Each structure stands twice: as C-alpha cells, then as structure tokens.
Length: 219
Image (cartoon, rainbow, N blue to C red; front, top):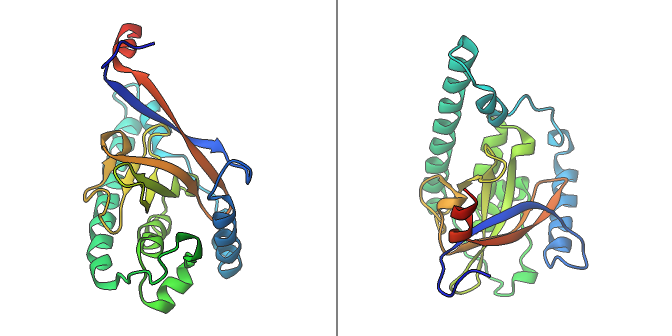
C-alpha cells in the first residue's frame, strides 16, 4: 500500500463493458440510442479511415509521410478547438434549463429533437460538438458522448470525448461547465467520467488509482 498522504494519480479505463445489472445509466442510454438510430440510420457506422493516433505513432523518421501526418494532426486539433469555441458561443444563446428536477425523467433529445426545440440543456447541447466533429470527418470510433460527475457535489454533466490518444482523450465541453478550452482528461481536476456512448455502443468508465510514488519507482 502507498504510504499515508502519498499523492495519487487517477487513470481511467474508458471502454469497460457495461451491463444493465451494474450500470445505472445503461437503460437511459439504450433508450436514447434507439431513438437516435431510428431518426437517422444512414449516419450510423460510417466507415472511418486510419486514426491520427496511428499516424502519430508511425512517425519514426524524417519522411514526407511524417511531415504530412504531423500537419494533419496539427490541423485536426486546431479544427476541434474551433468547434469547441463555436459550440460554446452557441450554447449561451440556445441553453434551455431543464424543467424536470428528477434526472431520471429528463429525456435526452436526439439531434433532430435538439434542432426542432431550438435548444436544450447540456444533455442536448453536447450534440452540437458531437455532430460537428462527425460531420467534419473525425472517425466515428474515436468520438463519444460522455457523462462526467463533478466530485464536489456529484452532479452529472455531458461532454464529448475525442480519443486521439486511446488512453487520454480530449474533452470538448459545449456549455463550458467542466472546461472552457479543449483539454486532455488527464489535465482536468474535480471531475470523474462514468459513462461513454454513441448511437450503437455504450461503455462504463472504471477508475484506476495508483500511487505516484509507486509509478515513479516503476519508471
């Protein structure tokens, strides 16, 4: 065991298997998925090209392919930052406070319902960033909606995660309640991810806590 008072480093298993018996969000996510797929089935399971993470990892020498991969990565990040900023500006105009104080009674809108209602709270406005990233060609298997919990008061919030790095995604927060700028999850304090999903898959997130002193010893 780590010595008393030793600093800890939080890591997360983002793609843990989710089942109805051990995941309180399972049924709610399943209900949203069924409506989202019926609304726009042609947008589900689009083929995706090689991920930027693989391109980055494959860059081992000073070749044209390496320079192109680096440029693509830089531009991809810049576009994601612009999407984050633009979506936050729109959320100020189209935010609608949820009238139902019971989270279990809050039905998450599909993208079509968000547009029809001309706004929502974070559960719907998150779809602005989520859909823009997909529309701009970010691989569907790297973009997920995520439920995060504020550690101080255990309130839930919805954000989008971009898994450029499979173990440390970028947080894109449409309403800015969690972070204002696009930030790696490892750089965020006071929030815990609990759930990830898209239109066809869902995962629970499992927290792993390790002593920093032990981690340094292993290095």
